[in-house]
Length: 317
Image (cartoon, rainbow, N blue to C red; front, side):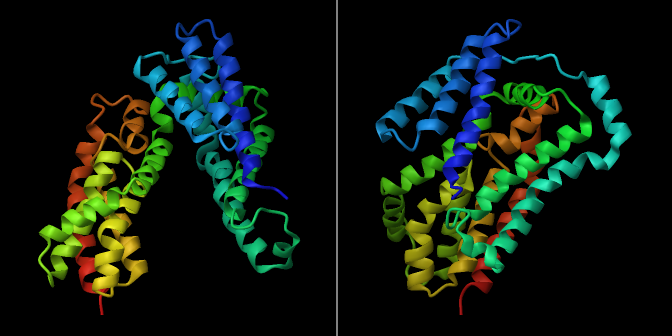
């Protein structure tokens, strides 16, 4: 049976390769920091499921210390230069996206085939992990296709990946960290505390105010934590389930889905959502790292208002 652990090992192998390549890269004055960072991250994928929570926590703190003390540098491995990439892009045009499309197509088509054919009874994939495993399989298929098509050197995927990740830096793993933070907040009872505070403020019978507080909480927690997935456990436990669903009889699916969209409005407004707002600014060499956020304010606020109204008018009988 192919389990999710196989993907963890595969990801750990990639990070291990980056650590070794970083160690050999004498052009990077901070190569030891880069090697330690990617090496520790590889260790978390190899052994994270087998070591204690305390050990995992210490590992995360060491990663934060490496990033916080500026031990990571930007590498410049010997790959194609900008002129060569521009010429290749002009020659291939939109066909460049074919390998990228292989990944979602494999995940979606593979899941449908596995679910609705006798193949699903074979027990080939770990139960309830089929889509994630097929997503990983799609990555391998896309890589194989690109290698056969481009006839690139064997180390090209690893070197290009290292160049891209080093240009992004520690922010590349921020989404995973923030999603884990949301689970920690929920287990710590932050949702109950927020719910108690909201209960003392909200007047009984005011449905609109309850919806507004729920959506505003999703937006603000997302701004603070950078990820709507981190905000959702807190606000669902605080207001979404006990007030909107149990007290007012709201539609669970609609309140959850549109509430997430309200949270994503916060994603558009915060530098904590580094993968959406800071990383593109770095990759595009924008003059201001907050340029993406400023451009998104005009979309985020009206969209937030629409989400509030959608829940208020559609989620309740």
